[in-house]
Image 1 (cartoon, protein in one colour):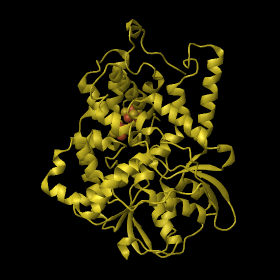
Image 2 (spheres, helix red, strand yellow):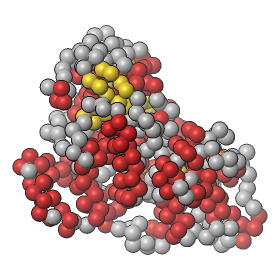
Image 3 (tube, rainbow, N blue to C red):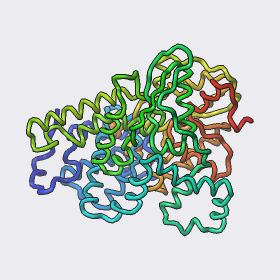
Image 4 (tube, rainbow, N blue to C red):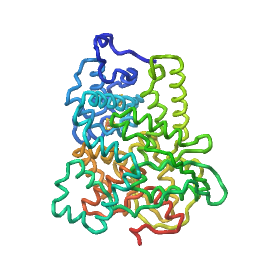
Length: 464
Ligand code: SF4
Ligand code: SF4
């Protein structure tokens, strides 16, 4: 049931930000506060406005016209990681993501429309939208950095203070850069199963992940092959659109969703496989994103044929979304073939927020890793507390990202693990940076990196 906001609201000529959100989502919150201790930003600041309950109160106040959307209110909302830990903690089933995501999209859209210089800045235009979503452009852009690392010029530039001359956001990007692996060849369009075919799957390779974690994409494809999967890698696939959607660029996000739905022939495969938690969460949400960004009847001024177009769009994106599976989720439902290569490694597992909170995937990666002979998986305290990566959060909210990164690092170091394993590219970058800056040599791996080595009877570099 859709509950309307108070009637007094109707006097607004321009409706307040968030007015399009189903008011019932706000009403589900009973203000019990049981979510606050799960919220990373509240744990760090102790400020109620940085808690889920406080943010819901702020957003609802704006929608009701009781609270002005001041810079302070915006700051509390922008500081949210959208990690969805509050959804896991909430006993009332509040769908916090359904509130904060459209609210921030609209907030950003209004800033863009008003010509706000930060929302329209060079970083958004050339880096966030012009570089990150394009794996090939990113590969080219990373080539000089790779050579600089090989020749030690990056350390020299740091030592001479040259990097401090860069704009702040580029400095942060430079700090996040991991030791770049050699470029991997492009995955073939079709990879055959090892042994009898058990499934046919399509692999979503991503944009940033494809450019920076090519070896993990290859490892994922090989693990799928070892499990009897024929793997299709559609050539026309594009960025999932999460970068755009989460920064308020709704229209390009919807276009990318449509391009992906066209690139993947979902009738022809058992699943669309993704190995990055953030992208997986976005892909699984395509149906909802379509409803939110192109509601039927709002596609145009109601002519029935436009309603039909809207319905077709929703159905296509819903259908695509239902085929998407995280690789761990898929392998556990298929019944994994036990790897036999021994890897004597003490490892711990960090839950990526968009895997555990948004997709409710917790046991499957751990169950897969427990199959690797010799691998000891030790628990990580606060495993489900965000590491501070959260998409581009560590570029836009560097202080809080660094605080949460240090908190995660302390917990990792307490485990005495030789490796930390996680299923998200953003977490991997954040963890690698924290470990590198604190001088710790701990391997940061994806579950598929470890499984692949075990299937191929090989050892990780940290054990060689
Ligand atoms: S979001 Fe849930 S847990 Fe948090 S205050 Fe509201 S009802 Fe309580
Ligand atoms: S999404 Fe994460 S950071 Fe945001 S309110 Fe919920 S728990 Fe806190």
